[in-house]
Image (cartoon, rainbow, N blue to C red):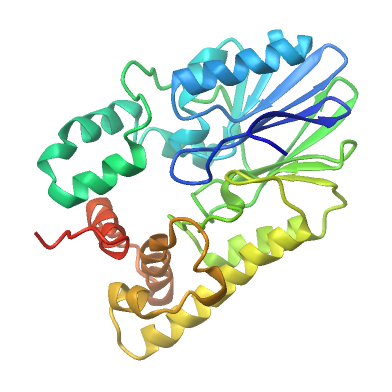
Length: 314
């Protein structure tokens, strides 16, 4: 499959970003009869507008989208909502609450001030400087749910399955059994390092097993190329490996950052953005200690920048 719009057959489309790194997210479209459902918008208005234009050119039923599902609260999956604001926008209740915590204007301000942040600012700009956060109106969901929500797109049943907290607080899978397709949001990063902002890790592993047990031909991840059950198992293996390695170092008394620096990524070192292990270990340590205290986001980005080779000590 290539970047851009891919026809999966039977009225299902996958939009694949050109990169699996920070902010470059995938999306999807399910149509039947006269109805359409969009899975996620993108990180800024230009990206989302381009995606919608390609969808409408290829699929007439995408010219009026009735339903949008945001798989979770990160901006690269919902910042484009205003371009489909006449649709019913659905997310889990937990995601809807989380969306307001890092609005696009905050990202725009951080990019604008990155020059004053030294190497940390350079890392932040390298991650996010390609996106346009100014002028985006945060457009929240108009409908929320907990657990599971069953929808119809034409004659197709589509199941929204809340599997968070995991990557974020309210991650959702979008499963179309007739199409043998699941859109996973950021439960799956393929050929890229997952990042666990929330946890617990057990929920994420359980979500992977749920996908592994599905009768599907098409698995559309939140980031990276289309995958199959082997790709799901690789993500699960990463999570299990990092959990076990972090636990050993937690029991030995290492700090979260020292543990992140010490863990050998082995089979996963070729994945993009390996420095995300700093966040993953920090979240695991929070889980191990049963603390609600959250590490400052700038500290987490500083740790990732350091692991990525930026000299944040100066």
